[in-house]
Image (cartoon, rainbow, N blue to C red; front, side, top):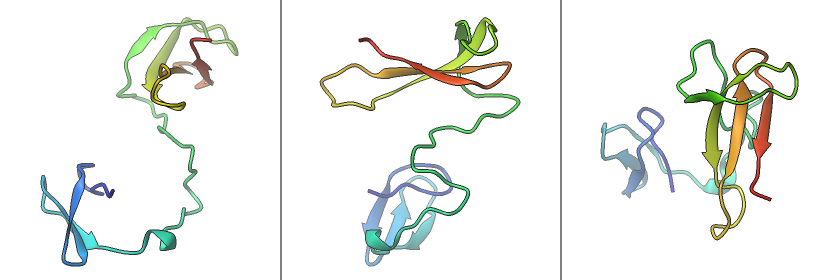
Length: 102
């Protein structure tokens, strides 16, 4: 499965290229074994924090600095029959922690 570098939509294979159905972006279809991570990427990286986050905000106490506000998101990191994990990012110190249902 391949996703568009421009808009993030799923791309379709078409005669040796990937074609985005949403924005018509194309790129050559390569062998997945040749994909590498650049120095600035990590496989576990989910989001990048910035001054103005697009993530929703909630009341949650940061275990590092005690701030009462945090951005949050959910991600499925275990098998599909288990609940999602909630992640929080402090709005002050940007400390990241998670909350499981166990």
